[in-house]
Length: 272
Image (cartoon, rainbow, N blue to C red; front, side):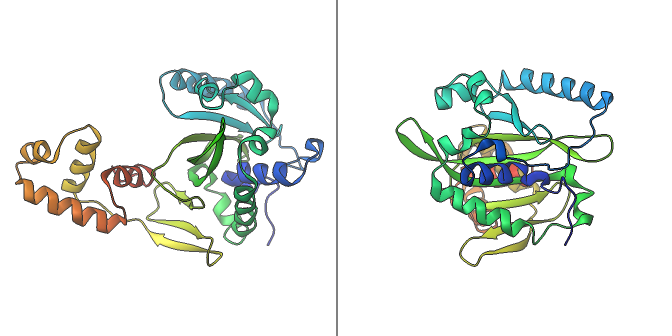
C-alpha cells in the first residue's frame, strides 16, 4: 500500500512520539521526508488560526499545543501547560519532541509504537481525502512531578495547505475518567462509525456510534450543568423514577458507568 508523504494525517503526533521515543538523536527525527509547499495564503490563514487559538486558550481549562508537521516541531503551547508540567510554554516549545520522552513512560511509548504500525492497515488514499475530519483520542500516562497520572490525548487536523496536504495538528491534553491506558479511538466527523484499537487482540474494530434520544441528550446536558435527578425530572416534566430508568438505559447503551463517562462519550462522538 502506498501512502502520501504526508499520510501520517491525524497520526502525525503518534509517529512523532514514537520516533522521539526510540530514536535518541533528535536530528534524525523526520515526519515529512518530502517537505510540502506552503503558500503565502497558507501562512496568513495559519497566523489567524493560531491567534484565534491563543485567544481561546486564555479562557480554556484544557491544555493545547500545535505541531507543525512540515517543520517537525511544536509551534504553540497554551499557557496552562506550564501549570501542568511546571515549565514555561517557551521551554516546552524549545524542547521540541523531547517533551514526549520526558513526560511519557516507556511502556506507553511501546503501545504508541504498536498503534502507529497498525494504523497503516486502515489508512488508504481514499481516506486521506477527508483528513480534515479526522480526530484521534488515546489514553496514556504522563509524569506530573513525582506522580504518574492518566490523561486523554486528543489530536485533530488544525491546518491543511491549499493543495490538500496536512500541515498542522492540534493536540489537547486533559484528565480522563478511564482507569487504564491504551484506549485508542479514531473518529471521522459526520460519520456514523468509528474505529477502536484493541491492544489485546492487536486489531482495529469498526463500531457504530449510537444515537441518543432527545430525553437522553437532555439528561446528559443538564447533569453536566450540575442539576440533580430530582431537578432534571422537574425540568423534563417526568417522574424521578423515570429519569433514573432513563439513566440506566443510557449507561447500558453507551457502555459507561457514570454520567461523567456518558458526557465524555457524547462529546467525543458529537452526540449532543
